[in-house]
Length: 450
Image 1: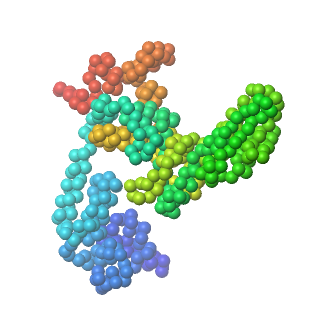
Image 2 (image 1 turned 180 degrees about the horizontal axis):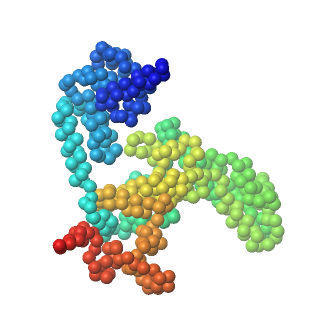
Image 3 (image 1 turned 90 degrees about the vertical axis):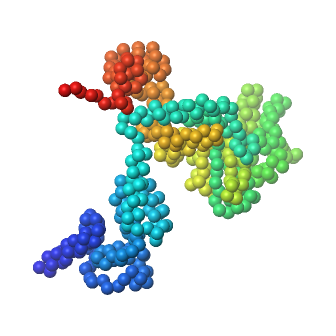
């Protein structure tokens, strides 16, 4: 009997909550934590109890003791959440409305929300609009005005980066490796403010081979390879002779390294064959002593916000990850395939948009981000980065005529004939080829006379 009374009490709580403009689903979820009591305090007293203003207003509203006058935070939250606009716009709108809450009335709030909803509806694409073609034209037309030169990075000496039309082509072709891979490495707090630490980290990352540390030459007289290390280079790269010797010994188990009096290192060849000696010389020269393979040069520069950062020639996002002093969350690379591998497809999609927008803006071309976004979506919609070409999007089209119109016409038609493919003639390209109206825009509507 007692349990039934308790249950009934909870149902009463739920009803009261719904009456106080709380959604039914939410009321069901929170009824266990509520007790129906008469509340006699006002807003000021609730705030003194260190209850957040937003919640204090909601409590008063549930009690039916809503204070008249200015718009409450709960009103903004409730009305914006009920509006038919995207979540991102809702968050931005809430933030801006909270800032001017004291100047708002309920009528003004409703008027603002109606206007925002109207503008959002107007910004939507018309039904049956050929968005793909509009995007292609919107990027293709300014693309013809691009220069074919490559430029170096502003403010970063001697690190050249492909920009302009070659960079756009590189992105839409989804090249596995860009022609000039580069990274912008942001540093952790103590490294970002100390140039010495930043330079030390740069040396740690930059690839260093034995040939960079001194002279490597093969001698046919005693059939051995001689290495003369430069003290200046060792000091600059914070390396000891012993470390270099250890790296040489790592080349193979049968390699004998001998330190001679004048500081030179003598490496004996395992046999007296000339080609074996040359092979050993190449092995020693190209032995990595320190750094990350693929990062050829690292330059330390002060960023616009006053902190030191590293610009690299070459990219190795995965290997950078665990290095102390690197702020991986803010580190970027222009290698989109690498981003997709390390950070996933969504990150690769964002990288395509950013890289294309940066390239277009750098050339002074104003293209709406939504056209670029559509291209990035099309390239990444299957979970991998695909090129816009015959090996990617265009080559995977269901229509035979559409594929044939793009590239390698005869091959496509021959293959389709061999496998007995059919073409439904529903797309733009194939409709143009056969001379039928395109099912887009006004062509999407068919009038029937009775």
